[in-house]
Length: 169
Image (cartoon, rainbow, N blue to C red; front, top):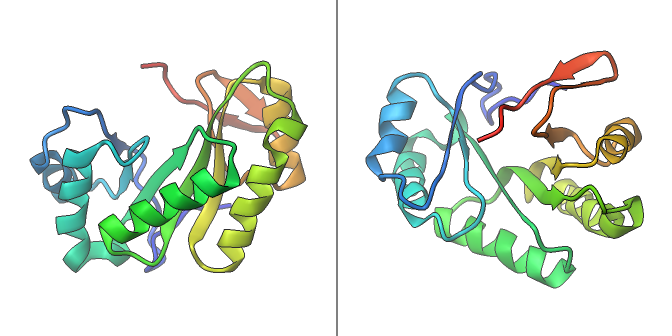
């Protein structure tokens, strides 16, 4: 699966991930230098969100907006997704991740939340369903089952003959 912007352009190989102290101006600087992928953990990353909100007024269809939640409570997940959509004034979040699927988590621990994300995808609220997984066997199952379209992983692994890499921070 290729991740593409709303206008069909590929996601940049490099993205800007938020930190609570990220300056608002970093968003425009990154975009001007070819970055179209922006990630933040939650609504508390206000500087990055303010930068994105400004950029999205004229460039929404050129961006990939990625976020997610560590919650497994469907009501809390719905609330966070709605809060992000309202703040950024967008109908859709490009990538929504179920974050920190821990080494101790089982499929049963995350399945209902991922299934709900797929329902919201079918309703046009999310474009790609993902997970931040720290459990290699579960990551493989989520990819093979189709429950997870985007994998964020802190290890070098080989899934379905595709090497995925995310460097630890």
